[in-house]
Length: 156
Image (cartoon, rainbow, N blue to C red; front, side, top):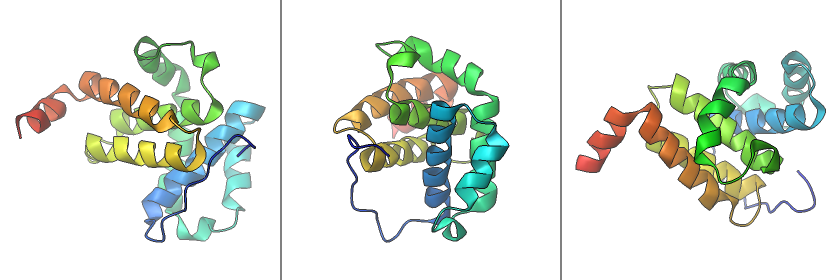
């Protein structure tokens, strides 16, 4: 997304939901940089090459839900990070918002899947060690938002 971005080789086995997350992240990146309305961002992203292979409904849910609850999501993330939200790279910021949204609003998706997807997005689009940071923050957030699920997983 910028010249400092490292791009991992995209997996050939990307599911429609993973692609929806990729496009939602691209939309969040655009929104964070340009502060455009979510409808404008969604329209732009839907025209992107390969969007037809994404789960369009899930993309819309992720993008619109994350943007509309971004203040609340930032409040949940802020105590867990070692810098201000403004100091996060746009990719880390977008991935953390997306992961926080899924942890909070998609209880049908196991928290480990949410974190893994966020880590993979950061590996694909973020800086060299950004995925480690995202992993740590979302792991702490999962403990706060889904304590029963995290505890049950720890007992296994």
